[in-house]
Length: 356
Length: 154
Image (tube, rainbow over all chains, first blue to last red):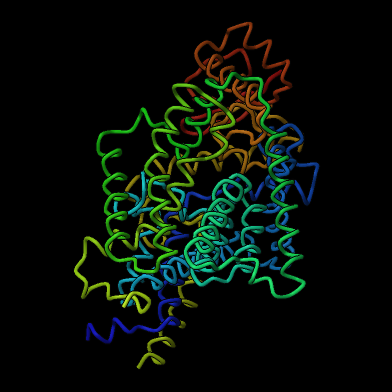
């Protein structure tokens, strides 16, 4: 029976994830009102003339994509007034993408399914980095669209579909510019560098058609534009220290290291070190191994770096890099499978076909 | 065997989806699978009061009215501009003024007869203030629930 379950089909997995996401979104969510109100403002500008929060959403170029995308969605799917369908569908696809990442490293599909379910936010104390509650939060948010792009971006990189990865990075950056710029782009560059160094597989070789060059040019333009936008928006009347204090108060997922307990510090390091040992022990593909071994120190140093530039020498620009958020998402997507590989017996997770 | 299983799961998915959507009570229904409102009755009361206050605001104030409250839900349910609440503007140059409004709301709750605070409230163009019911103020009460009331800034 267990053996049969281990060979569960992808369709079955997708349906199970869908059912769990329907229940998850509607029972756990406390709603993300702001984006819905920004859409209302977009359709009728007479609403919220003096509301700083809604106006900042509606006017902020960094949010344009999410607001416009959902606004268009509302016009096309007018019956989904509560954005329930799009929300649960995005969550399902994201979880399925994580399941496919697990599958790249492990054979046991049942365990891949269980592993992907850990990424729902109530499981924060079970798996992620520092309790990153927003990773797959039940509410609809700009992060939701970014994470959807990001998990398929990682899948594309692992399967060496570089043009698809570039396209997803572009969507990722317009969905959530800071994470697109400071997480997806460096990941793409680091991965391609490792491929070039270890396998002499220069990704430009994959640009076999004209549209591939066109895609790369678009990518450079979009990334440059968003970098310029972020730099231009980094203005504040507050001094860096005061600004960062407000940020921590209202965005707990941006982390204030000095508030961490010993367990909160111990847990991510335990998780990372186990993942690190797992990579050394089990990952045999040379370029992927190099990529993961280079990622681990970056993730390890994220906490002290974040602490220095937010609490010792506060810097708005360094806060904008979202170092711990990036490290957190990377560790979830790429180190979690190795964490499980190290702590669980081999017969449970199964050896990935590429590792045999 | 998997074909039958998948068919069953697909039917269950469709069934659950329509049950969830059609029975949803709140903006997001909390009570369909896990009875949160039974487990935490105060949560139900709070949600109920916010909806009542917001409904009154929505029905009795113009679209450009400015409401002063720390509850973000009022913005959503009343569809009116809100100052003094928790959500932070996404534009960095507006964070200072957001913080000022937050501090002003706290100052007003601490001392509702504070002349400086009342002056600032008028300067902001605030039309209505949501406060705890037992707070005494020079502004008249226009609507109240079990724990909160709405003051009209004259």
